[in-house]
Amino acid sequence: MTDKTFTFSDVAEHNTKKDLYMIVHDKVYDCTSFVDEHPGGEEVLLDVGGQDSTEAFEDVGHSDEAREILDGLLVGNLKREDGDPKPKSVGASTATTATTDSASAGVGLYAIILVGGILAFLAYKFLQSQ
Ligand code: HEM
Picture 1 (tube, rainbow, N blue to C red):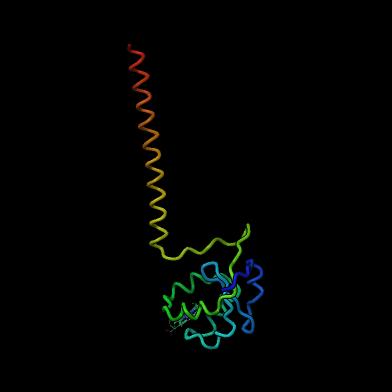
Picture 2: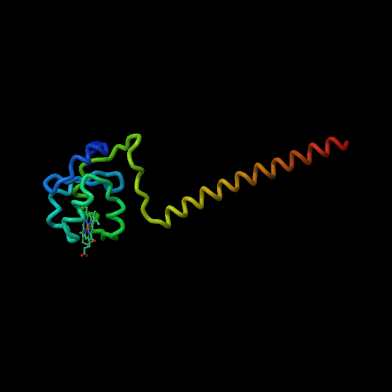
């Protein structure tokens, strides 16, 4: 296990066939040795060299075997800095669920504030009529 940390610009420097890093799920992989062996061809790997390729990797629906190979290429973790691209969200359904969840939580909060306001108003009216 390695705990070396790379910034986005560190990774971006490794973007040639002889020196090829890529980012998947905020981890940094050295794919140099694998370029020629990739069943999907070297072109796609070179395209994402030095970049965040989470989306590209997940879109293909790579097998568990592919993920094991990826594990073996791990060289460190990505350290995001201000101004770096956001983490790639993968799986539209997960993203949608998350949005819906927070949206309904927001609505719930408004409902509580609204009901509280109505109760306070009624209590005020009641006390005034005494
Ligand atoms: C280091 C990262 C990667 C590894 C270890 C890897 C590994 C593999 C492996 C083992 C396969 C064979 C099928 C499978 O087991 O799922 C495969 C297929 C494929 N990969 Fe990757 N891959 C990587 C990155 C990428 C990226 C970034 C793309 C970008 C689009 C990509 C595109 C494809 C395609 C299109 C296939 C299908 C090839 C075919 O079935 O003809 N791969 N990859």
